[in-house]
Image 1 (tube, one colour):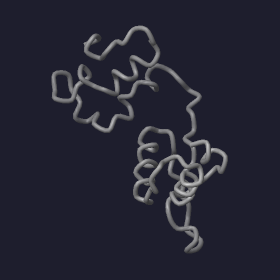
Image 2 (cartoon, rainbow, N blue to C red):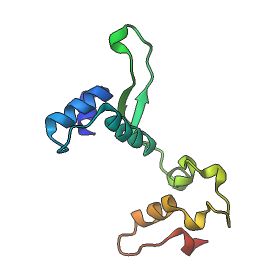
Image 3 (cartoon, rainbow, N blue to C red):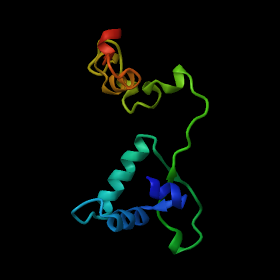
Length: 123
């Protein structure tokens, strides 16, 4: 991600070239492999896709930049529920619920290094 930060905006091809040049992996990554990694970083809110108009064939394709860090932090903006991909299926007592949520468990444990609370402890 430092590479993207230094470059400001990067394509999948730029990222693949940087990974190859840096020797990050022992195998050659295909563009689809790099795209999966970048898509995961977008889902984790580490990167943002840049939407731009197409001026020429050389400008086609997605471009990515580091995600903007929110300066307005409060409890409600930090809870993972707001960006959860399965939040519409989440309900107390359901198959997907706050008591068995891995995202909530990870978030709860992040600020308390010696104690590892889980969502089940709260509900």
